[in-house]
Length: 161
Image 1 (tube, rainbow, N blue to C red):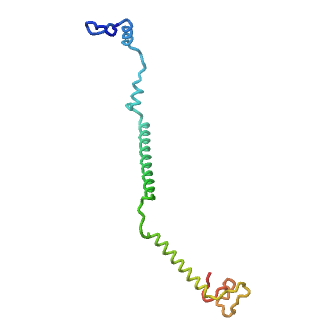
Image 2 (image 1 turned 60 degrees about the vertical axis):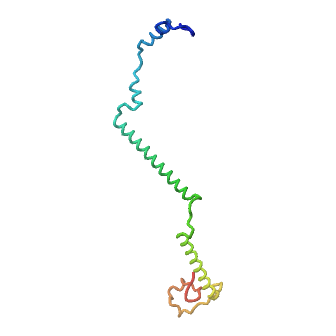
C-alpha cells in the first residue's frame, strides 16, 4: 500500500493488496439480473402499442388541446370585459343613442302627463256619490242595450280612464 510521500513503483502503478484483487474479481464475474429493457423502453415511448390504445391517447391529447384553447379564450374574454369596465376606459363625451332615446321618451311622457292634468283641471268636478250623479234622459242614449256597462261619471264628449 502506498502512503503519502512514498514513491511509485517503476511501472507507474501502485501495488494492489489482496482485498483489491478480490473486489475486482467479484466485479468481473457476470451476475444474473432481470431484463428491464422492455419496461424501460416502454416508459421512454419506444414500445409498440395497440391501435385502440393509440386512438385513446390521441383523443386525450386533442381533448387537452381543446380545453386549453377554451380556457385561453375564456380568460381573454374575461380580461377584455374587465378592461372595458375599468376606470381607464374613454367614455363618450356627449349623449349616447340609448341615453338620448331614454331622455326623449321621458320628456314626452312628462309633457303628455301635464296635458292630461290640464284637461282634467278644465272639466267640472264630478260628484262623489253615484246617487247624486245626473242621469241623462233615456231618449238621448244612442246605446240603450248596453246601458249598464257605460261609465257615466265622465263629463264631456270623451271618457278618461
